[in-house]
Length: 509
Image: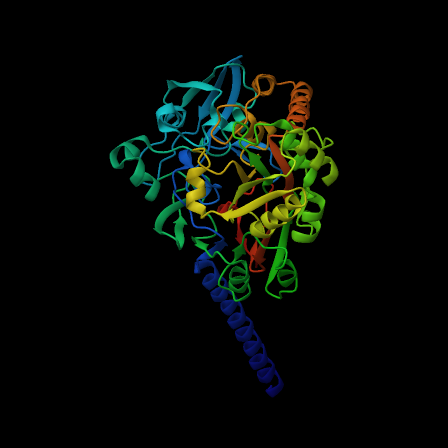
């Protein structure tokens, strides 16, 4: 009998111990889930209006929705639109999801889509990303939950264009009530997260949308924290103060790999294609031989290997392998300083010239890269003054054409995963980010936008790139890989489109 009593007591003790362990684990899990998820980035946002972004959309993507979205394999899927089809060569019809509301209670309808696109397309508003949707003529409301998107010419990319900014949907009544400036400070959307606060220069805080049409997210609160110094961001990750760190530098990759609490997430060629832009209507860059000379004088492979420590891939293109329309790597300029000097002499600059190179900290080791370019050009007699421009100033000056005649800029097609996004905006004359004009290139870029034949589009883009390499309005350098430091407490990995959709993040059990 004593043995039975003793056995019973032992069983009770074990059960209580297990119960206590389970409760402890549940409490710990709840504590983690209730703690804000912190995403540390190099820069704060400039504004939160998706129609007028001059930066990536990592924050606003969580506040707003698009008609079309992508799955984990980057395939297009229904978003605020449940279906779409091309009913005429220049008309795409979208059926819209019913029962969706903005977080202020305003209903999402066809009128919301018409208003959201109209403000971006209005030339008086000078939307910086208007080129992404400039094929659209107008949006017609068919009924409360059906819209027709009418294009100027046939555009097979319309569903793709409605996947990212600037086609995120905003509430018409609220925007008109508070005005554009206030809306950019205090946005309202239909997205998985609701805006809480923005401490300029420091952070943006969001909370889960409890009434989100696609289910309440696991992460209840998220803070996008601005931490300019990479080493400080890594310290925050290792100390548990940050859960995701963007822009991990080549020097810090090893530190993250060796961390016991975090891991490195790598996206090959997932970042910007960085190039040196030249204003081709400004001396001496109006001379094609000068532009070609500069290309011959730059050893991009050396910059990638020794300055960037192989954290990028040298390229001669404005599109990457994941972009529809990518034509592969065409032959560019071999490193040939002697040829560069000869071309400068032919152009009337036997002793070189002096110029200013603008750069900005948006890109990995940007100052070191700019200095390396200056050192290489000095060998052919070109003396560069490297000028680091403050981020907010650069965002305003470049689309306005107020940057120096020689400047560093990066672009990508991550918003559409199509070559059109970067090539049109950067190479077509008259676009905000283009400092180049060539009628043949313009015609081919326009034609590539109107055909659904991918083989034909590739031919056109290959022709554009061949012309551009010969005309040399840009010094193409490399496409960055993207590196993220990720806490082992969460399940998430970097994506080729550079988005961070917090609703897709879950906690490790």
